[in-house]
Length: 320
Image (cartoon, helix red, strand yellow):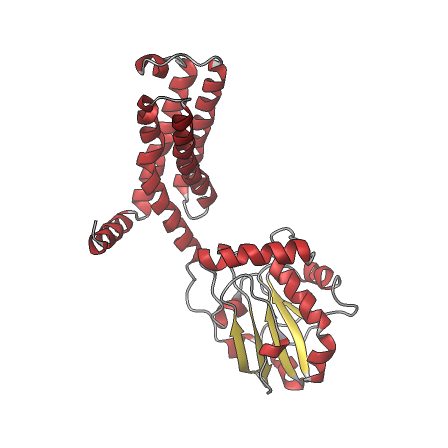
């Protein structure tokens, strides 16, 4: 197929999968799975007799597979009510429709299954693969779409206060502020970032910078978290609604920015070898971080992270 034709096909398929279509597809998938599961449980020998295949030694295991498929169907009905919220169910279904055919191909190569069983794989997995793919894409894009235009940053910094009770604007009048945005406290890279900044504390103060962290957890959790890295109370801002994030146009990450090869490699290095580990999810896991320098209420330097694995480096700051 020429590239132009493939792109037209892709665009057409994507345009067809709007919310009503996805909800209908998930309900059909749920109905199919439940019916297929019930039939396998009640008539476990039927498919093998129809395909003229020898019966397996343990039909009970085949019935268990029917039960699992039927339970998936219930999940699809739940996901159909709100695909954006229940996208993990769609993801699990999509993965199953990838790994099922892979397992069949392996069984076919070693002679465990005959080619005539391909019809079951086509009906259970392959025909649903593209619809589930587009449902997953739709749910992800809906989940990562930003809300209406946020308030101006210059207005917010006069309203939002730090854990010490002063506004961000007031803090920027006293000294330049190094404003560090954390993705979420469970993130390996965020732990690494806070650790690296704590090591550079004296050098940061020499540059007349006052570090202030912005996070999406509650203030008490922030106090507890930063106490692991600092011997004195750290100035931080709780922003669970991401008002400050959005006002500075800090985006949610794409799949490649959050789960790309570089992120996996860096995550393994930072989490295992550097000992930063991983904690419970606190805040929006899709949010990207960054750091800014404020002076008298104005942003005089900004760095917006292009991937989840970026962390603060003092050398990146220009002389201000």
